[in-house]
Amino acid sequence: MVKKKKAKPAPRKPVKKVVKKKAVKKVVKKEAAPAPRPVTALECRVCGYRLIIDRKCGCAEEHVMVCCGQPMEKVETTV
Image 1: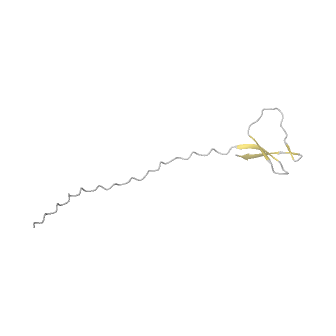
Image 2: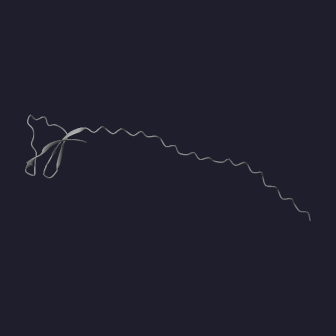
């Protein structure tokens, strides 16, 4: 008996290597925080409670706030 020759497998094509690209992070500029602004506050000298005055009312006379039976004192602070 005659042996049949086995067919050679087809030559393989060269495999291209896939190179994954790294994700590029976008540079985000941080917004500059606004500079602290001075505000007027009223503070109770007994209990330490504070009221921050965010806008003036425009009255001719000054308003007196009372806490713990005593008028509150003006304090300059920053927010």
